[in-house]
Image (cartoon, rainbow, N blue to C red):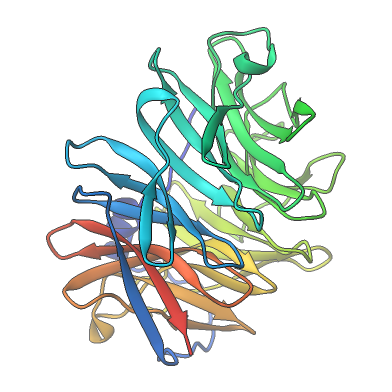
Length: 350
């Protein structure tokens, strides 16, 4: 089964490809307000990435250690703390809620990736096998958590394929779509879920919205053949990416019930590529291409009220990628230096 994975180098390649017209270009703000970028550092290794932030400004992500392995981290008040692993070599944090509960994935002593929950200084295995599931070969990843302790993610195995799951702390697992490919990435406090699923009749996945019952197929932007949803806010607004595998296009979108998908566009007239990763109260963050006159390459963006602004890059860096935003407008992501080393960063907008 073909699955399209979005990583920074893919968008970079797209940004350097031939321009694909998208129709009339929306009007975007080209200059950011006053923005301070903080380098969050690493756990002693070369690279790190920030993937989530809560209202208190606690940041999670993952970082290389001096020996080259990668561990999940919690950053707060200027200090990055190693969260450890489930006994294996690597771990990766993907989300944090207001209570400081952290989710992600980690390798076990047996070398299998399992979803984890970290709270009160302890990392707990919340994978399907650990809760009595039928298939001990299942690997899993926890991708998001809300303030009620509802975790979303995806699990996969040769027997079961890949399926989106819910895990309620204190109650256990349930599957959103056990009969077909699916993965859940975002959840709001109402328990509404966003992700991607291979709906009947399609070879590639489509973004979905799950309000608590049946999945809603969000479709794609015009001319595209796949989509994924990565974030959802308290109002049920969903963001993600839509693309065409044949034309190598990628476009960020925001979806609203009754309105459908809106193309977020990009900051480049030459390379209209973008992807939206996070949203809070209508403020969208992600990554977009920019015109050569503005430095070229890719930059993290903030989109609000129909306008997109560049968040910029650290001095000495060439690229940036924004992943998540909190209620205070703090944004986290990754800065990419011109030698391709990467650091977790925090944008503070004034």
